Image (cartoon, rainbow, N blue to C red; front, side, top):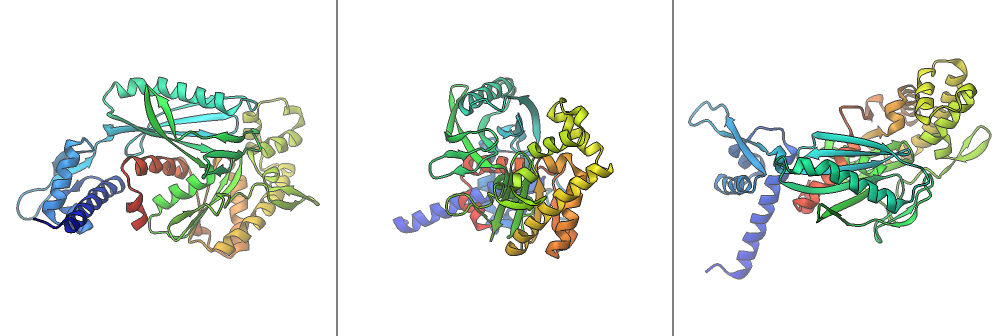
Length: 391
């Protein structure tokens, strides 16, 4: 008979190793062999083989062919089963919602965008989002995807994590809105995760640059925020307000303005209207495109330089104070205004006295915020909190 205490310890180790193998499979480049799992995780080969066999039965991994071997039998290769489950990442942006349907590996299966009114209340918008998700997911689940893993929302507002509420969205006027932890989809309760843009950006970037322990992420879009990773952990602050820099007053053109009134999608639309008054009745989308396209014109360039100087001075203070290994940028401004971004990064590198390569900007190949949202879903589904905290 194994004493009960020893049995509990053995069960704990077995459970931990099971999750370690899942984490390893989700974060490693395929294909992978049983021997590689055993070697890299320092788990005995029989134990790792038992875990792999269990995961194959559960449908998480599949075998695909054989690898190379100099001596003995060729190893059977493994990979994560992409059809194990679906995740949904929802980004609420500048009068637009972007719905991303991802497989378990994080590959995009489908994306759908839809516009909504700035005056729409939050509960009705959430209902519309869920309805659209159901329409997209139903045919996918009927085509062989086994599980609906969860949904993750990126919202342009600070969040009260203790009470699961939006504190206040300046742009939309949402205040004290309840954020449900589960939503009924296809007659099933599905886990829902809520996070602001900048924190998701920081978390996703930390997953991408796994060996980086101190990271700073600036989100420039409908809101302006900073996501902070210190010692490998996302830092939200005492009340979840760490990084809420959009309302900080900065000197600009002889007065003090909130940072979001200097640089945000809304402020840049206003700038475009002032620079091109004959185009002021065009859509916000067209005005933003026009501003980037005409950025080389002297009167436009002058305005952008002023913005870049103010923003870079403010961000340099934060960068110097936290001294991160990497500073990441993302958001609609980053993606749609390369001219303004380069102005900001050039000045920021100079003012912070950091090398230019320290600063990383997201592009079509590196969507850090979506990766962060997807990882939150997987972390909860597989119970990986304690595993990720070990890394």
